[in-house]
Amino acid sequence: MTHNKDIQYGADGIEFDKAGNLYVGNFGDGAVHKITFDADFCANAVAKAAPNGKVTRIAQRPDSDVLEGELDQPGEPIIWRGKMILSCFDLVTGPQMVNTKHEMPATLPELEPC
Image (cartoon, rainbow, N blue to C red; front, top):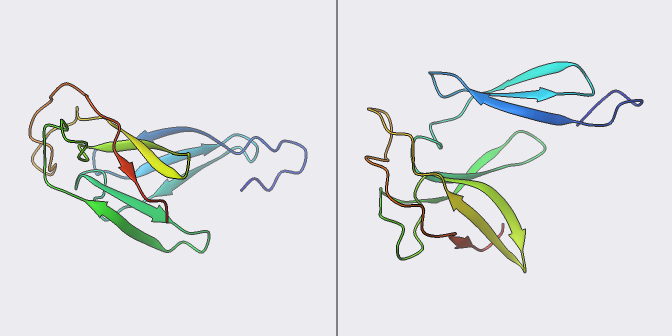
């Protein structure tokens, strides 16, 4: 939500720090918001954030090769024809990550929207 009534551009630009916190720029307000997670990006999971700030995990799975439509570092969600479609980023690895290696990003998993 942008509070500036003259510049209603809102969220523009994201970045993660080494601790897994997400920073989101708000162009209209000239502000940067820090968002902390309970490791969903690291946990191969999808979460829903409500306007009141409540975050609910809606899907999660272990590392996979994505060839059967599984989640594998999901991101970029969109709702298309009544389904949530996600891309499998599948590139970031490390000690805190469920993802163990990079495979060809071969699928766009579908979830029921919540």
